[in-house]
Picture (spheres, rainbow, N blue to C red):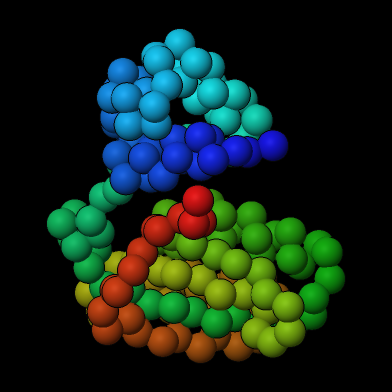
Length: 151
């Protein structure tokens, strides 16, 4: 069970994933050993799934974003598995969710610019298995991104 100290650890890690164990312990009111033990437990239990850099897509030449709604022709297990595997393998699809109802999937796609996205759409998205309809919405401005769950 996650208590208020674990939540405090998670909040501080969300703000700064590179915080030292000593600084983290100080912020949550523990000594280093018990703080490190709790941190290890959160990692081993899967509460903390990993650590990674938050990279600005525009800074690496990928400032164009689109939200793509996907409707499949048929929603059977083999089609969904192939579709989901192909989506998961594609580096330009940075988020993907299977939805209840219609449409079947929501994809967040990044590209360099509109012409690059159009080429990606034509060569990658339209040939995904089972696709009946694709609807793109272009992102005008990111207000909040990768926030993670509230802790």
